[in-house]
Length: 225
Length: 225
DNA sequence: CATATTAAGTGACGCATATCACATATTTGG
DNA sequence: CCAAATATGTGATATGCGTCACTTAATATG
Image (cartoon, rainbow over all chains, first blue to last red; front, side, top):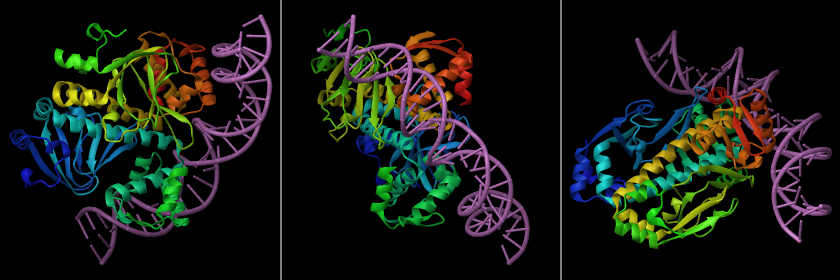
């Protein structure tokens, strides 16, 4: 049940809204609970809303010419997904799905655009978010190219440790094939690489349950590629 | 000599400014003419300005753990460079340099931030630009991973054809090593791949002068990776 | 609870491109 | 204009990881 006014996980952008603007925002969005694996939107689909991930985790993914999906980004709560909908092209250029049970709010594009043009602080917060994202894309682009698979896998495990779970024991709600899609590899290579990291004593793995045993070692593997 | 009011290549964002805002903007920026190879800003350098590429071409680049530079983006005129300066961290996270003779305006960060918060149309245009950029990053990320080197090289040649030169004869103002940095490869592999594209009759090359002889063939190579 | 389906793991092999070492060509600077 | 520096090009070799085919384990469904 939607309860925007008491929402503890409002985006920083939404926090800039006046009460009047907040009410407009609230009236123009619909909240949905999605199960793991369900789609937020699909590439090629007409875009009419911008999605806001209230809780849970999502991935942004896109098919390449080889027909295989690639995960472009793991989205944390309190983030917008699909801002490109505000562009002129009316079709989603990539897909988004949740990877664990999540709550997603869909915000009507026109109302969202209106908020941007009437509240510069809201727009400013979006710009800040997008700048942060750009930095992540750059770092990831460089790392994916210059690191070997163990370094890339270490990066991803550290991401879930530091930015999602904040704990040395956590679940990575991705299959081996999905982890491969995230780190630009194949599921067989991911399995072999996981084995390497286990063998050197950096992590313990049981299905999707991960435990970081030696974070410094993992960081070292990440740093040297 | 700075002549903002008659500037034919104002950004779409700047076009949204009121005359008053335009004057503030104008008073808070400095124009520089840079030669090919000169730096706009360097990674690690304190950021105090946002750069605007008035004319010429620039690249955004960053070193990876292997110590080698990677080109993250070729920047066309009428684009801002280094928007991440408006974030809290006061240091550039990547470098930017011009790749041909260019004119760059440096805009004071505080004045730029002020413009964002006082003019939502200006902010809106920035958001649109950043959304377009994000799409490019996603496409590039997927293509760099899923295409083999000939496809990636074809992509870059087509980029210079369609988005920079708008002509089948053009100069790519990059060394072979720089082309390699752009397409995630090495200079030897770029040379071999250029040879392949020449051999199949897609292009002609003389130093940095390129001629696309068979665009359809080049597109086909790009599409199939 | 049993069966079917999907995911994970393994071994063997192949390949696209990186690396290395060098020669040649071009550009730069005095 | 010439020497030095840098860029380009080439041949040979190495390698990290993808691919394929299969077996085993885990999960989903009726």
